[in-house]
Image (cartoon, helix red, strand yellow):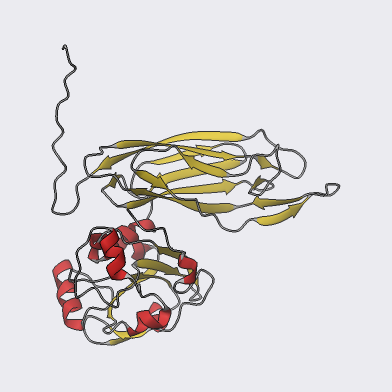
Length: 53
Length: 276
């Protein structure tokens, strides 16, 4: 049986919050600052579990 | 996939705990040009509070076997960030299957913010235009779809939101139950408080353009077949001086069953009536 649904309002940033600063390497190894790379545009930020499995 | 979003001027970023090497290989295999960010060690995901502390338990509950790679994993999901860097939309859900939480998540969630991929039902009347669409014309086991509803309320009008006293029809969307489909609650933006001179009561109303989405999760075993979803959108539009009669729109959305990746649907057996 599936588990009862979680309340995602207690998990991670919420609607209305500024999205946190994120600075990570991309697939070429270059460091990307998410807000800078966004350059004033809207952004879709997808958290996925793996590109391998 | 990405061109639809570039046209809307939306930057796309994906984040996972994969190494740069794994992401490089994935990007090359799939021709991905947008940044795949490597959060090796899950430090950013931990800082943001997105790690699932109960991955093993969740997997057992869904019948997924234990796997030593399933540690420090995030809840899979997506944020839409606006031009000011503020979270405008947050979509997270229970990952019923790895397929929905791994690379496949990108494809299905990018679809959420594109124009309607399937048939769209639009019903205009004088005060309110309603547009509704499913975010996918197909479903497979454990997939979560959304019925998206857009309400455009004409100038000078408003529609009631809940809570409202008896005698008024608040905005609602109902999907008729189907065995093997779980219906969630529709999420609307916050309504506005509204008072009319001479009336004590405070009303909650929506004005302008609002969008809501109603989650539908298909949990039946493969072979459940295609469905026709019956949705009812009800509302009552009023101006400051008069109310229109309540409206109830009955809308239908076909959805076809498809197989899980690398699987086939069970063969349908012919049923014959006893006695011919």
